[in-house]
Image (cartoon, rainbow, N blue to C red; front, side, top):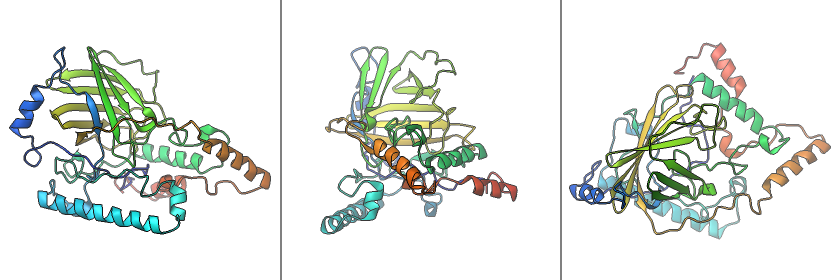
Amino acid sequence: MTISRPIPVLLAAGACLGATGAVGEDSPQSAAEAATMKTSWGVPDLQGTWDFRTMTPLRRPRHLKEKEFYTAEEVAKMEADAAKGREAWAQREYASQPSQGDVDAGYDAVFLDMGTKYSGTMRTSLIVDPPDGQMPGLTRYALMRHAENRERWERRPRTPADRPPATRCLVGFNSGPPMSSGAYNNIMRVFQSPGYVAIVNEMVNDHRVIPTDDGEHLPDSVRLWKGDSRGRWEGDALVVETRNFRPETNFNGSGPNMRLTERFTRVDAHALRYEYTVDDQESFQGPWSTVQDFRATEDDVHEYACHEGNRAMHLMLAGARREERDGKEDGKGWLPSWYRGLPKKADLLKAWAEGAGEDD
């Protein structure tokens, strides 16, 4: 049995400018410019602050079928229409009282940092493999894992451990790895020194210090929130392999044994190409890969003080204890709205008992 859409985590489309040149290709001028961008110790210079917002969806819209690229005219119209829609949304919110939807999600049109551009690759999806632009289905093991998460998160919390990791400010929903366009904080900065590359994400101020000597990974028993990343140079690309994730890992349905391969390639002074491949046989029915061009930005990476002054966890636990004193039934109203699409264990067991297969 599979899910026909990604496990819902707070994902939103943003914008990203990409490489110059023909659709889906880099111009000779851009390639020549990128080839000259080297550090003083002779490796490609990836340094800078990069914005990875994009309106390009992760998965190709079903109605586009085999259409891999948009035309420039199609992109221009969609970007203009999206800009008008966001402006109308913002104006409605300015003119009216806050809605319950705003209260539930915690954000409004002013707060959300949506982008305004499709990726410069002009692709109809970030996913390029499988060729249909669709994410492979989830395995039964992954579906059951997410159903168990739903059970835990919809119960009244006994301790902070009963809430999702993002609610506890332990992970950022778009900082990865891999990095993916989200509702806000879609900025990261790259630093380099001989033998190392460091990536700092604005979301939760997550960071990775990646050795580039292609060294051995940590033992399998050592598990990290962002995994264990090891890099190497392949021509003009930095290739980073990450494994040893914690059990709480969940990138669109992935698990702790995901093997992630990222490629960073400088396209020109204004674009950094980011590619990644997810290989997680326990969770997906096949590997899948994406391509996106990040754009250079003059914006700063600001502090994301998720914990400081955040009374939400205290209030949640206090509210749970109040419900217990009042004798309120458990399991009512505790599941965050963006997790309500997670499968229910009873539904999975019923479907499997009725003979549903992996592809149903």
